[in-house]
Amino acid sequence: MRPPRARLGLASVALAAALLAPPAASAPAEIAGARLEPVAIADLAGFPGPDPAGALEAFRRVCAAPMPAPPQRNGVTGNVVDLIAACAKALTVPPQGAADFFRRAFSAYRIVRPDGTPGFLTGYFEPELPGSLTQAPGFTTPILARPDDLVNLGPGETRPGLDPALRAARATASGFEPYPDRAAIEDGALAQRARPILWLRDGVDLLVLQVQGSGRIRLPDGRAVRALYDGRNGRAYTAVAKLIVQEGHLPLEGLTLARWTGWLRDHPDEAKRLIRRNASYIFFRLAEVEEPTLGPPGAANAPLSPGIGLAVDGTLWRYGLPFWLEGRLPGAREGERGRLTIAADTGSAIVGPARGDLFVGSGAQAGIAAGNLRDPVGFVVLLPRHGGGS
Image (cartoon, rainbow, N blue to C red; front, side, top):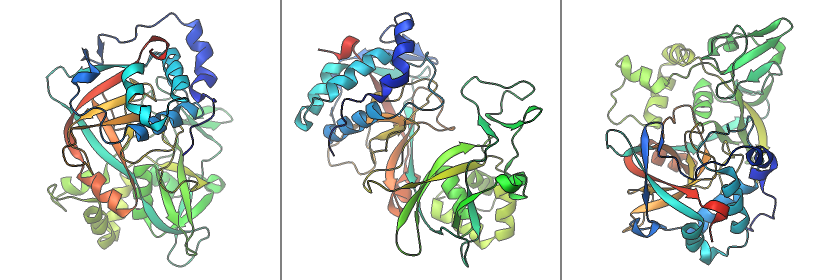
């Protein structure tokens, strides 16, 4: 893949605001109660891992991507001016120089939690599901486009009269009101605003798509299109798999995606009841699959690199920051002791400074790998040096 041209998406909106703001320290002493301890990159065992060139490409993609909407707040860690400078330098680095680039342009800080325990890493993937552009036998459950009255709220943003816990609102002629929950939407609360863009086999496939946030839809003629996240109703998310375990239908041990979705399909009445207890509802838009080897765009608006794209707490960390993960990860080569990843996404369950969700790829095998990834790992953040380093 060719390096992006000198179009720095990080700069498009954030640069002016950053230049007007007072200078920020390159590394705070702590983040959300966790200490940031300086560590020499040379002392990171195994650095830069198996694919520094891939990490460089992923970093460049975030640099070139449009700014997220809503944008991250100014207070997130990662000096935007220094990160933009690192982006500019990355444009000229050849693949064989990737490791040296990260050593020179960034300083490393180990994230030490208050109780001394390691961070926690899970995995996510892009499902590939059968579907149709039109309603047809076997394809009866719609994927809905974003309604025109949905107003999503950024971190800390509220609307008069709304519960501050709600992350979206419904715009009406008289003001704002809570957006309908899943059950109400399924019962027709959106009326003509519920515009289908694709049709899936059933509500279980829709739930999987909504949990993962995007997916490839394989059409009857063999073509694939992508359903991309385009907003949510702002209601609290409830994990249906957790409800299945809590009610005693399946044990937690050995609970895989295939097992709990299979149970839902075998028990359609119970499935409908449990799925409706998850009040959160996701809306989508259609997109082409432009590069089959890459995943969908993450919250940073850049396509995700399998095994490299990392979802982090977007209220704490700026997208584009490299993270060194200390531990053995999915697909690790013999002797691999860590991996260089790039913050390019976020998620409602990804909370805290040493919490991550690794994008492992697309399709059924990636789903198995993602389901098996629930491991303690060490987190080391690489913060850009002043001016992008030497």
